[in-house]
Image 1 (spheres, helix red, strand yellow):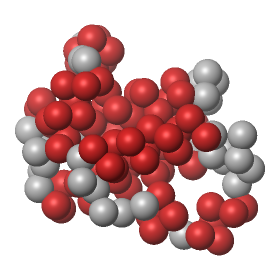
Image 2 (tube, one colour):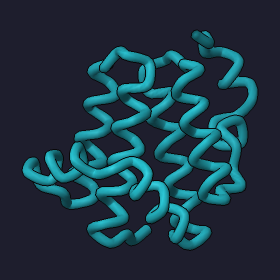
Image 3 (cartoon, one colour):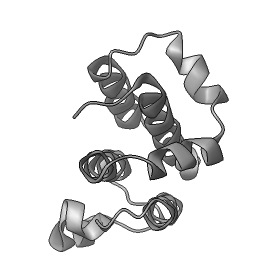
Image 4 (cartoon, helix red, strand yellow):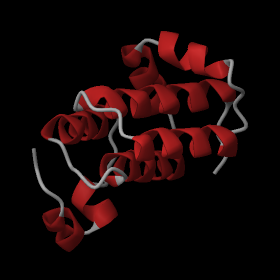
Amino acid sequence: MEFTYQEKIAIMRILLDIIHADGIIDERETFFFNKLKERFGLEDSDYQVVKEKNSLIALAQIKLLNEGQKEEFSKLMSKMIIVDDDINANEVAIYDVVADFCNIGLSLEANIGEDKLQSYSKS
């Protein structure tokens, strides 16, 4: 899936919000974030751009993605939520708000499976 530079920054901003949502930065989250940064062709210096990106502006940009891009983004959010083997209520809340605002039709359960969702502890 292709994304523009600004779309990549917006995606990474929301994923960074998910990482920070539970107050615990797990090394698996950081590893996934860095792998995605590489996949997107972003430089280390782009991390500062991501950190400075306003989350509301990022949401507005994500809302403009096409359906395929939104589906890919929802899968990335889902992966970020479960990568540390713990599903936190704040992470789920971010997913739900983003999905609702950006008209993303895929639920977290649809992306990861209901049985897998049940196997994770909810905080």
